[in-house]
Length: 240
Image (cartoon, rainbow, N blue to C red; front, side, top):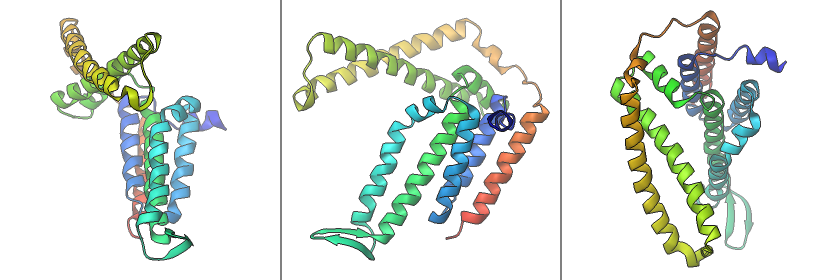
């Protein structure tokens, strides 16, 4: 079953990017909370079919916490229909519905995007953007952003390890140290990204602009299916 579903997914980065955009557009258009389980199930299916579900779940810890925050906070501050009350705390129906809707769409969009695009290297993703007609400057900016994030992540891991080995303070007592560390990391990572960009240009990065090959039948079918699903979800969920 999983292998059959995996064969429905595209292999070309251009098709993967198009499918992710089509599904994300459809998920974002949902206005009825009753459709949230459907888009969540679809996102789960894409994640399982793409492989490496544990890695995708690991990357989704931040978005999942943000979605839980919406579900926990909005029922307390939004709406007029009280579902439950305990002293000054009131749980409201409209806020709960809004929290579930926002959180469900957020998690579904992030899951589909990670499942389809996380396996694609930054270089291939930039090439896919150019192949889809995105201006070269925007594709280069996307590539540098991805490389900068990776550099910043690596620098943070190294600095945290060095800080622990040197007995750095934790909690509120170390807020000042954390601020200085973040400022230094941003500057160092930016300079390193500039050196990486210069090295890429010297090694013939412009070769990425070569005309891309035509999409295969599998990629065209997957793109058409994702576009159809996105349109159907849009038509079903655009109006509450």
